[in-house]
Image 1 (tube, rainbow, N blue to C red):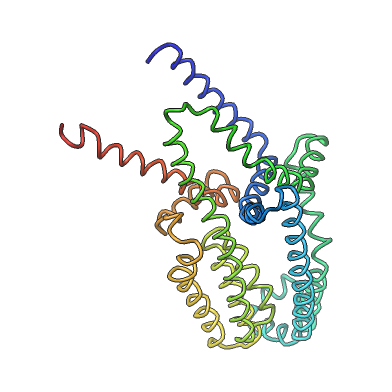
Image 2 (image 1 turned 90 degrees about the vertical axis):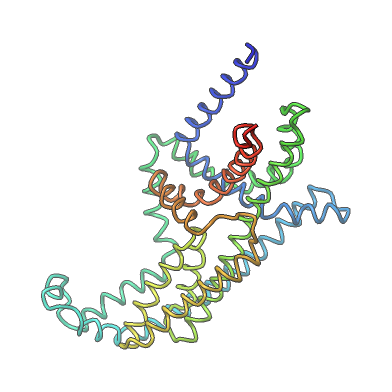
Length: 357
């Protein structure tokens, strides 16, 4: 290894270490860029499609932005109306819930919580539902307090908060400059290695596209299926629970666990039997089976290609090391690493050591 190569490798290592330190101390900014990057991966195919039809890239981005905003506004209106109706219906059933809870709660717990009569339980539950119906403004305060505590200075807090409002700006520039960004990075790759670079970049791109767009599509499908099943079983807050379970499935298997727990609790409160909780459990198991055998293979395909056991291990390690952010990134990062491990395995099998030459 000559002197220039050693200097180059040392410089690259130092730059990677510096980037890791910056990311560690700027995790909130990294999260904003990650969100913008994920959205760019979702919307870029639509922009490319419009480009092929003769629309300029900037007008195409504006068209895609407008369409995305209209769709998001429609979905938001639907959920606001549906959830408002569900909470109203649930409030009507509060007396029945209160009576059932009063029957199953031990006397010592009733005394400790100050709910000695069914009326007091109903009153407490009514207060909870009233707070839940106004959850949008109320949830902002604890989130802001949590974010404020996470930063050491007022300036850092303001900048971090501002970063989430300028995610659309990040997204716009990522979409606008994506082709030039790829060309800029490629300009640093030696000519003799560009073939391998483009091949591996294509594999990584397929993995990320398969995970980001595919996983979000799977989450949406599961949210619809969960909600429909719980609605026909007769569970209160069926759409709320189904949607929450679908969204939480962005972290694989997390949504299923949350949905099962919430739906079983609601079934026990409403029906006072074991049939409806078992129906909820059976529906989630059926949908989970469909997800593993039909939905994910058809929507995501084999681009990610992680064994379920490997995905679970990656989730546990990511969560243990980096919390929720680690769990979000665990599967795509592991899938990208798998691309390089496959190349390493192929190189090893072609080596003189393996072949015995």
